[in-house]
Amino acid sequence: MLWFKPKSCLGIDIGAGGIKLVELREEKKRPVLFTYGLTSDEQNVHKIVSTKEVAPQLTIADKENLSGQKPLTIQQMDDMQVEKYANIIRAVCKSAKITTKQAVVSLPVSSVFHALVTLPVVKKEELDHIIRAEVKKLLPMPLEEMALDYQVLKGEPDARSQRILLNAVPHTLISFYSKIFQKAGLVLEALEPESTALTRCLVGKDQSVTMLIDIGAERTNFFIVDQSVPITHQIIESGGVKADRILRGVLGVSQEEVGQVKHDLFNYLSSTHDASILGEQKFIDIMMPVIDPITKEIGLSFELFLRQSGNENKKPEKIILTGGMGFMPYLANYISDKFKVKCFLGDPWARVVYQEGLKPMLHQVGPRMSVAIGLALRNMVL
Image (cartoon, rainbow, N blue to C red):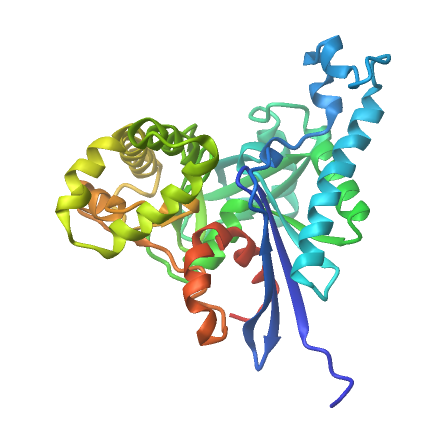
């Protein structure tokens, strides 16, 4: 039918390494890649919050504009941030030639309150009241100022109790995102935690206990997924930026050159067995300031998960790497040997149909696009 238009879904990931977007179309009940785009420059958009929250911490100098005029008002600073990020998103959308205005957008995990609580089994109409009373004790700010979402998990420890997964987000952050995407000319269909998008993309319906490690520019996130649901989340302040500093010192390259040098080095080491250039152990030793915090957190995260009620007899089966630094040579083998658990780089395109000729390029950008792909898959049949 000539008037038939395929269903399209746009996923937009806002992270420290920039903005990534993916548009998928559903054809014959399969998600098909239509277009994608990403910024090449780092953006501090993971720190995106309304200036109403940070204004008390700003100095007079911070609030003055470059002309030395009187300090800007909170609303003016708010509007400036909205305009800045809207322009970036609008530019990426234009470059990628997207066709849909409906967008599913990621929420930074650092801004999402996440908790797992065990409550007695009660009637459905009573559950909401009990959860709200319980979560008030845990939230970092008043419940009235946050949007609350919860999910009753399967496999309760016993018949008298149930496990509830809680997520809460400040209303100010939701409002701020809404303004940005309205300014960018997009309809904000949904906001979703990065953990949920990554699970959909890299784990799917797999019911086994899996750890997802998202190694970004400035931080690394650790998620343990059980029965296709992200249960725990830990974070460390380490990632690609620290690796860049190490390589600048070892190789003597500039800040401007290190990105391309890292890309070329990682690709070469991943494809060669010539130990005379830079052997596995030597590379591991050089990158240990990045690798050691990651391995320590893996052990702590598994220990925390296995201590939770109902998890005592469970066994982690795999570790999946993603994020821009997921390509680090030898990292997967090192982790696998250390924890005796299968570890590998996740393929975010595995559930997406695309042209075979695009495979080399998509493979290169894949780990950076995992969240955006997972967001775009939200309303697709899988």
